[in-house]
Picture 1: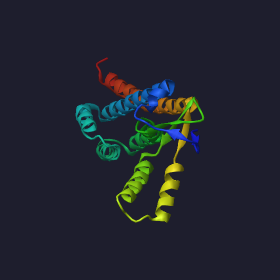
Picture 2: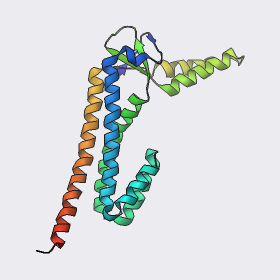
Picture 3: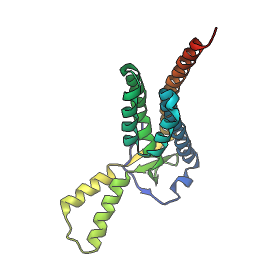
Length: 203
């Protein structure tokens, strides 16, 4: 697990390049999550069977995760049994944690810690921007609000998390496990559809 970081750090657009091994993990995690998203799209198509082309078009048209999930659930309620819908939702829910971790890593603001050559520090971009906005306002002449400044400082410096190689490996593992759960359900549906087709075929 990443651990809180309290030391000094430096940050630049090229921070990841200073940690090439860890940067490769960031790329790998991004690629794994893309495979996971694609497999969820394929699973959705499998569930709708003959309407799979429509399902895929809808899946690709809605980018944001929550609206896409809501749209999928609405469509599936029309087409599937309650048991199959629950099976799908359970699998998708199991991917949310790994995908959230992926978002942190891929969209993270990375900094270089002063004390550890084998780690990298994740800055919370929201806390970073809010703190800098407060400082910008003060430089522009805004009244200095001490409690507000202290809260902003504590939020920012309390958000720093230090990642080492093992932390990235753990995220990779959870993404692979999530992919496998989605793929297993897809293959199960594949077999059911194939068996149903064969049952209808002339003997």
